[in-house]
Image (tube, helix red, strand yellow):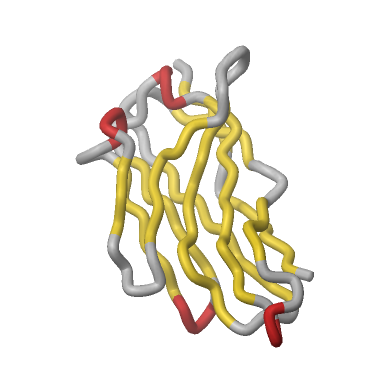
Length: 121
């Protein structure tokens, strides 16, 4: 089993910054792509950013130039640095990881429990 634990959410004023972290733990062979998604009230969950094991990145158009995804493979951790935050960034942010299990057992996509980000004055 794989556990993903997010941290770093909170309340911030418009124009402010936050950094989210997500650490993976458990027994697995490798972590492939990792990503951040978000879900605002009444809306579907959407991809915010993703990063491959080789550090290739993808961003939603709405966050390009403001958010940066990075990972520390040695610590099985993915980060999301967010600057110039807007009210429309308010959502629950979830990390996920595409994991290869030991001998293939337990392979799949795992999700964290989510962390609330609220952008408000």
